[in-house]
Amino acid sequence: MAIQIERVERLDRLLPQTQCGQCGYDGCRPYAEAMARGAAGPDHCPPGGDAGARALARVLGIAPRPYDRSRGECKPPQVAVVVEADCIGCTKCIQACPVDAIVGAAKLMHVILDPLCTGCELCVPACPVDCIVMEPAAQ
Image (tube, rainbow, N blue to C red; front, side, top):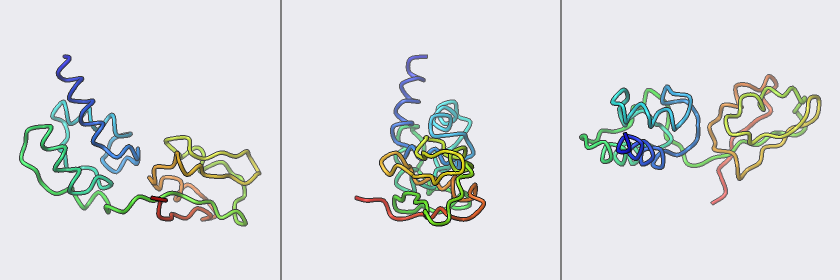
């Protein structure tokens, strides 16, 4: 059991922690658990790209393969930004954010805290007025 927990920890540390769900799981930890159980392959994470898939395969002791491009595109780090003039304060973006990086109150403009934003893009389709844009993350 301890070996399994250690493997989950190693896999989880290799994942980008975007919590985007593109892998088909609710976040990076559930995906790491599925890989450790043998229920998922190491190629499900677009944010990790091919390098991430190779690193995960190494930990699993299996042959590496490129990430599954049907799950999404591997992009450089990015963060969400609210276009202030367009925000209506509906709170739908707050509800969609898996890492609580968005603050604000109903009927008031919301703000995304850059250091907490993982760039998962889940807030973008949640916004009914399209006031959230993705920008390159500060290096």
